[in-house]
Image (cartoon, rainbow, N blue to C red):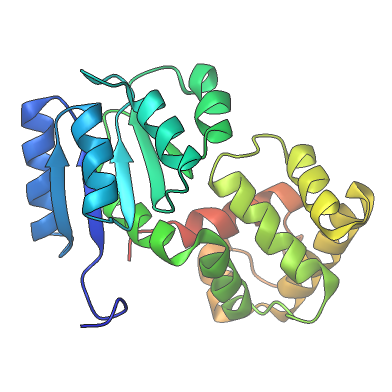
Length: 232
């Protein structure tokens, strides 16, 4: 069986027994995934290497080895699985650290397992790619400068790597060697053009008809990223 044909592999690292067993049943049953459970950080790190998951669902407070240390060692040695951190800690206090160590997404506990399943699939396929496909359906012109810039900004906001829109503009401008102002203007033109076309997909997602004003950049990007994150 090829990698594309096999079920998604998810490693759940969670020391709370009831939550761990519940998550395992939902991931394998409702999610149709292959899933294994590690109840401490050291076991989680060992399974990350030996079992080779596609996605790791990682608690931060764990016995033997913390989730922070697991993530640090795993990325330092070149571990490539997507990592979704699930924590009861204040997200504002931990997001800078976990993203700097290589986490892909951060979620606050208690989690909704339907959302977790969707995010696992999303991470395995890539949020940018989901945003790109959705923007095409909404009527975005892929060859326009604003298209890829909107995709990247929406992904940065959707993954909580940027909380302020200006931060997303600056990061995308850095990647593309342009200015944040140009990114903002290009996305504004794209949003107006998509609104003018008024495809069924756009109207369904935004509730906007032709006579309504177009969305602001923030509204447009938030709708794009949120719709891309809907569980499949």
